[in-house]
Length: 246
Image (cartoon, rainbow, N blue to C red; front, side, top):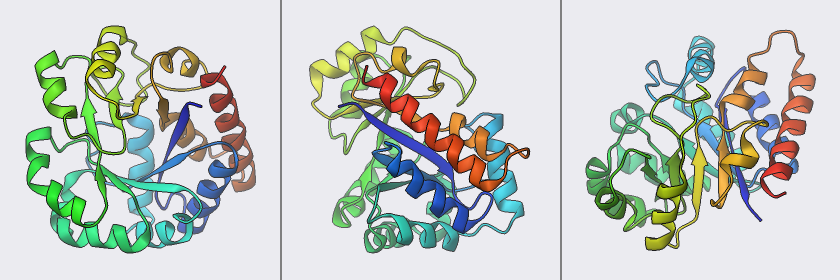
């Protein structure tokens, strides 16, 4: 069965609500959860996730927020931290890896850390049983793809297009998917632009999808009460999980 990886922005609108959303996503078919660490300059994210980042920071987000959420949910759903490298560097990568291990977090997704710059941190991550997820883009050459995924951990994150999350851009990934599958047995997930309308098509040839902006857009909807947001997010997760496996 193809897997659904769901992204939410940690601490938006608050810590307890993030916990409730995470657990409801698990009940609704999400296999893994990316807990987004809010950052002031989320360069890979579009306006939806950027807005949620800003609101979370304005509401007083700190790393303790993501730590508390992780502690509450990691026994129920496979949890990863998605964030830009600045907080990891500022706090210390060793500290973050050990903290993740202590809290039951299984991996890091750091989109602004290029493959070459990831290498010095691999041994620390391995020591603490934390996967560093590798990114591949459709613009990467075969040679570069092979280099990136040689030691891929947990899953390979295939960026669906060159751009930012949520922009709805589309590219033909057939050739890239085929080559990755030839040289790696690591599960391959596609992200960027995955929603209820695109999920079935984007799931072709891969092992799962990563959905972020479609969920965060619901979190940002000021016309909905918190309970209504959870109901709508749960329904969307169920719909996407069904579509990628139909």
